[in-house]
Amino acid sequence: MLPILYRVPVLGWMLRDAFEGREDAPLWFALNVIMLWILSVIVFGWAGLIVPALIGVAVVFTAILAITVGR
Image 1: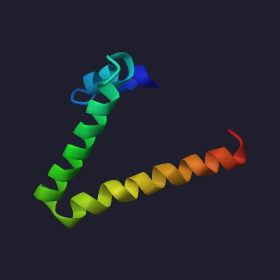
Image 2: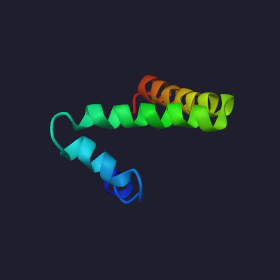
Image 3: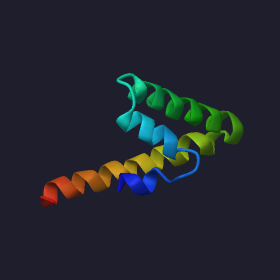
Image 4: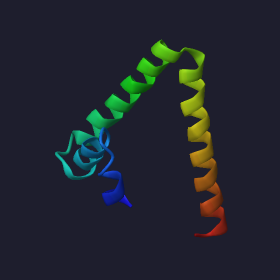
């Protein structure tokens, strides 16, 4: 799955560096994601805050279901 994500033009090199880079690379990746979220709130307003949060809810809900089913 990760080699496919590595081919995404903007985030691919950031993901590769976060997983295969130096030991502080995951911290910088997390900070970049947070900064992008703040920038989306500045540019798009309330929708920039809510839409990523709703996507996160769907991802976590799916993970919880997968764990409880046993996959």
